[in-house]
Image 1: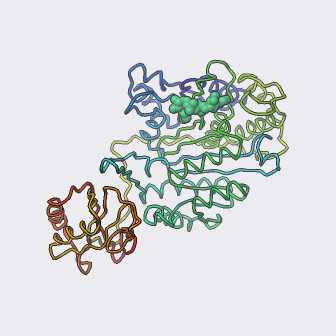
Image 2: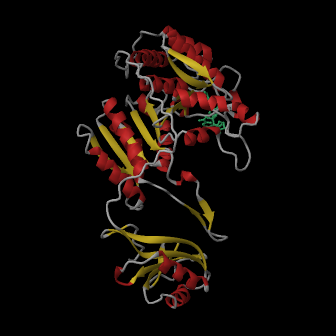
Image 3: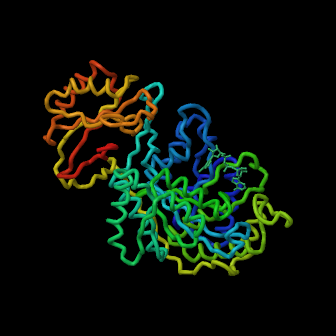
Length: 483
Ligand code: NAD
């Protein structure tokens, strides 16, 4: 029998996990569960990553973790157990399914069926948390979007869309402004789209996407986004279908996958047996489908939809004039409705075809590097300097240090050009960005850059630098305003 790891979690975790596993058992899901020690209570026992070494080993051996919500320990520098798990096992894709489930929302009342799957990149972007105060007044966050990282998550999104017979897959982005980072993500999207001609692949600027999701959510199917934009758009979608109590989540990696609800430990209602197990049940259904238990997943989901259509609800949602049920009674109602079909959105039943997860023993960190396509040359450098002088004074000093090989191209402040042209209305902070390029795009060495750094440091505090590279005849950096 296939075995998976189960971590019940903190707060309402054990109650809702027990309810879900009771439903699975009643439906004869052919799975065995190994309960592992993980959560805030394990952190409190002295395990700084929130899991015992035995739990980590079991999860890595089995490849699948079904987890309840876990409380984030308080204290500066302490990482969330949930984030640690996603990072430790490199679960690069976060999949969340949002569908109209009960009659409480504007859309369900209007008879508009929503069934949107959001795939969010789960590792990169500003979530690396690489941040610095460059001056007392200026904070900087680094945003990493990588080609292999984008390819991994987008490939997963297309494969998943193909498996679920999706019609449309949309890339949400902001490449009109972030031409290099989001531009790379969109480029990867269309490169992968070539291998999936049956899917209509398109892209939408993320602000426009938000508006369209609210006005016509029924027009979307699968949407793939970078980390931060995906985080925000996911919660927007949760709002469309009635809140986080109905939002399942799967964190997908090449080696380990984690299935959990989006919501937290709900400390305000923990231990009362009144929590809504729907989101965790839906996460469990995503897991059953991932493992090939198609028939079980469809039977349980149809019973859940039927139960919700009957108006049966826990205290957090539904018709307040109708008495709510508790967690165990809700699970019992779902079990009693096995075999019943909902009026709306019934799930098709396919036979079970269990797929045992492939578990790899890793000796070294996998290297995900794409082939270099063009020759790289350094043609300049951006120097970030601290100063409270006026732009012309800064330019005068910079121009003394060009060593006969650099030209000063532009100076900007918070991304707005202030030299050679600028507006006197621009408010200045104590942080300038000075772009130096080689004369005639001649190739430079790192030693040339160090020499410029040395010379400039006599006049300024330099708090960051970025090389300007050319890939063949293509600039690997964005043009500064006014260039
Ligand atoms: P929360 O999701 O736990 O609770 C927000 C509100 O929603 C509360 O009023 C709660 O009672 C209600 N709620 C949540 N889930 C519910 C359910 N299944 N049934 C009925 N009502 C439900 O968010 P929070 O209070 O911000 O976080 C509490 C703890 O959970 C924190 O320590 C946080 O870090 C953690 N957390 C964990 C995860 C995770 O494990 N993936 C996710 C989010 C938050």
